[in-house]
Length: 397
Image 1 (tube, one colour):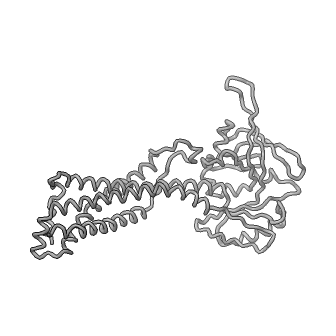
Image 2 (cartoon, rainbow, N blue to C red):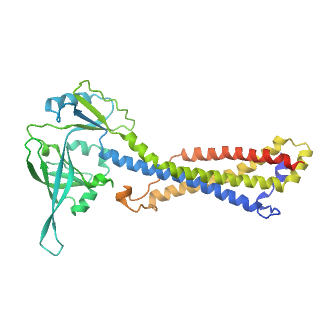
Image 3 (cartoon, rainbow, N blue to C red):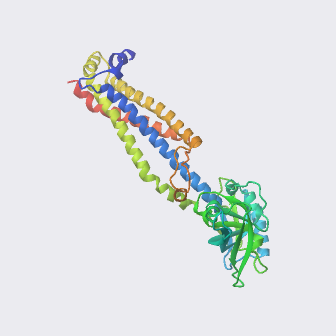
């Protein structure tokens, strides 16, 4: 068998057929298969990296669960203590906090220009979330997006998003005023806050969602609107149970968000798979031309007693040889591209507000480097067998 390999395919990369393109087909096949493998790995890497980043940001500003009263708009202190006792014994590691939510108007006093003493008041509509300090300081989901890692959430503190801070031209330790509407009294009330921290998720939440201590929004007639919480275990299974029919447990609908993000993958990945099939098709052209170029040699080996399955094995081996070279080069190039993108941020997105990211992250998954090469190997075997079986009998007449 070794002599047959040498006899038929020795130095086949440099063989010049009568038409002059056999060696060209070899290098073209290696190039196209390598390119398609790199393209499909990086497509998966970039789309998954984008989804992971977006989902992480949305997960940080959307609590995993919310407990509200089925019949009333608030929860009193006794009911809160009952729910607190139930949550305290939940097996999963969670953090939770009572919350109050209100619509408000942020008022920022700014100078007309740096050289002028005249000022104007800028007004922005916002969504105010009153919570306990521990929910932010102990919650690594949102804490990793804070500009100031060590902060004290005192009564006059407020945390705003980066987009909002840029819009009102304010930063940490600056003062702003908030105007709230009291649902019970029907009156507006105002309070001055100091910006204690700025979070930067690069999502639209950064433009309108602000956090204040719950004590700032609470009055004598209202304890809280409900309870929010986050699972600190990535394998969360939504197993919170409260045996009291007055309460509803609402979970963040992450499934639909993931389905929405996955829907954008379909046309992109479809194009990559088409490219993969066309690349392997070029390999079939290489096998076909080798069979034409070496048909006389195949006849001689066949007459010398070589079985058809041995000649088929040689053709498949040559095809796999091309694929293995392409897989090796493609995998190395893909790893290099992922490393460069994550460390040097070569690919930047044109609009942070539209795409919710400033650069396109690349996600590394070893499974990419297993499933696609494996598919390529199986498809190579299939197409080389098809080409050989379809054309070998013609050459023996």
